[in-house]
Image 1 (cartoon, rainbow, N blue to C red):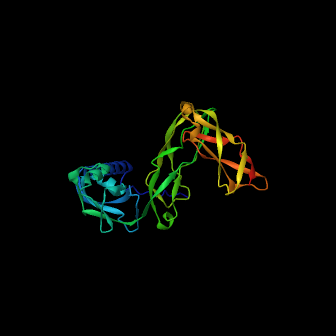
Image 2 (image 1 turned 135 degrees about the vertical axis):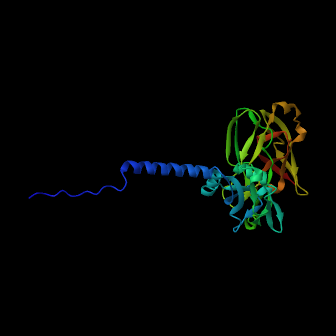
Image 3 (image 1 turned 180 degrees about the vertical axis):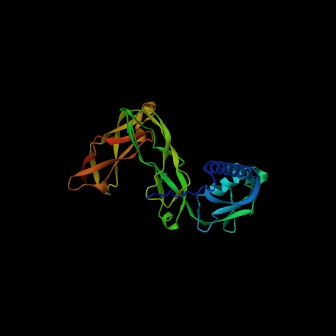
Amino acid sequence: MISKKKKQGKPWIKRGPLKTFLFFLGFSTVIWIFVQFAKQYTVPVELPLTYINVPKDKLLVDQNPASLNLRVKDYGFNIARFKMFPPALRIDVSDSREDNRQLVYDLEQQKPALLAQLNLDFENVTFLQNNLRINFEQKAVKTVSIVPNIELGFAVGYSALEEVKLQPDTMRVSGPQSILDTLEEVRTVQLKINNISNDLQGSIKLDKGGLEKVTFFQEEVNYSLRTDKFTEGRIEIPIELQNVPKGYNVVIFPKEVAVFYQVSLNDFEKIKSTAFKVVVDFRNELPKEGFLLAQVIQKPSLVNNVRLNEKKIQFVVKR
């Protein structure tokens, strides 16, 4: 049998001309897009909002404006960018004024700052509203003490001239009234300093542990400590009797005690025995032991670590 060759149909358009046609079609489309994007347009644009720098005594609530509508005049490329990838516009709430329990953010007044974020010319942007009205809740505000949580370790022969000082030593906080009613103080974070032989100064953060719902009006405070080289002094002080019952004659032994203390080398010569007072109070008698307890009730402000060589004082009562 003689096989018949199948007839093959001729292509409507040859492949060479088709490729050329598609190339010029795509090329002309790209050129058209560039031409269109190179033109200026005036179109409405919607930008999302984020709120920053909220006053510490205020809390923003729900139902605040989430976006802002503008009319922008710009080239098509920039318009497309704003439409496809709208940048978040930051609203600085601290620049608002309070009016009728709302914060009012004046868009025209803040226009230069807002347009600086968008890199747009002043005359090419029109806000479709005059201001933003921001809803908030007023927090309770209270002033509390700041307490240092600083552990100090001194080099041999050195000690502090006074307590650690904080600047400031009080601070305003805001938050729910139920929490502030019982909040009296805020502590610093824990800090440990060893081998101290010089004056100290620095800054330290505040401890927010357990106070997540409370807003601090500042995050840290400054601390300082005066330090000096100390020496130990010793001085003999006569013991005074107090509250001896009428008709009783009480004899004590010893009649004076040695008082040991630490004092700065610079102040050593300033310490006088008359600045100390040691007493035994007959009302604090230890009848089972037959002793009275001596205690220092007066000392110079320049000394610390005061101690007695003898606290238990023997006594004899004569009637």
